[in-house]
Length: 109
Image: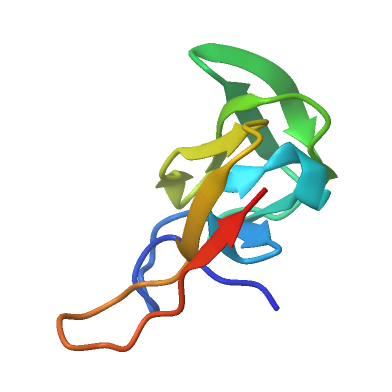
């Protein structure tokens, strides 16, 4: 499933992570999807501080570690997502959580 990294119903650009775990790890075969009320298929992708893909598709398969964000005309810039390649990772669900929620953690090697 897809999980937004910003609250549900927000009118801003969201960066969805599949599989829906944070931090994302390269060996999970991560796909990022840029979603928002702005213009579809006019996404600008950023890695680190560098703009690297103009007027591109709204989804891509990650092949390099780093930080990613996207921009859609009309709904703005997404939050940043980090993709790691660590050998030991403690992950939690990539969704908005509230105090008192039960959370499943994953320790991955």
